[in-house]
Length: 337
Image (cartoon, rainbow, N blue to C red; front, side, top):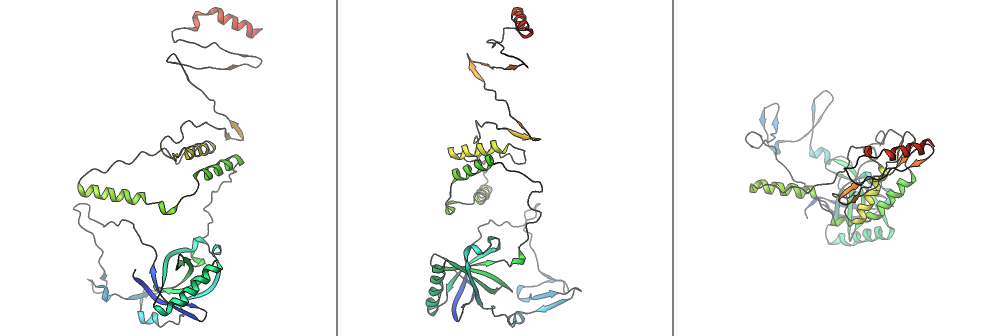
């Protein structure tokens, strides 16, 4: 792997020559800007505003724009002459527990490679010291024109460094949480815990980018003049809808136990649970159709203030209640009695 920075780790009086190597790579698919009418490439050109001509990279330098709009030229030599001890050094300033670093500060990751045979011994010393202490090192270094904060930790037998954002670069979460006060019931928390336990853990190394694979398939199909395959139908996620949270959690637990995830039909056969509206519980009535002789018959309950009477089941669609006056009279007499 090609190094992007050469310097040294300053560990007290110990200096460890190292090379900085990118630990990550970007697999995103890049697109070019084109003219939609004819497909021609659209390019950016670097033009000098004073001479109104395109300039090459060798002619381009740095400049700071002052408040009045004037440009103050800054050369690489000017920056190299700054009295910054971290210009070519990763200076360790402290060792802290790994959980003492806020994950929000994590940024780009690098590998630190020992630069030359003499660097092998002090490099190994620092690596083993980090392993035994179970701590990480906080360091300062300069890269690409600015001083940065870094965290050194051990990955296998290599010292890795994560660039960290400065604390004042992280925005506060004010205004992000829901404005309304929502009370979560214990039953809902129990179902959420059950769902978490059912889903279990995952080997992160087995996960992959489905979107990138779909874009690659789309590009390949377009290049070959074929039609891209239709994506598999996804289940209704209920996004943007007001849902019964308990019912959704129950569906999710059952689907996870079946191994069906959130796929089609994952929530089939779910029962509706009480909904709370205006402080009152509303229970949805359950209707269970039964097949009788190829036709559906439904049991219906009728409730009065004093007595509960049950209507007789109709067995065929041809019979009419008008043909049974005796039944009606009997019912009226019983009710009045």
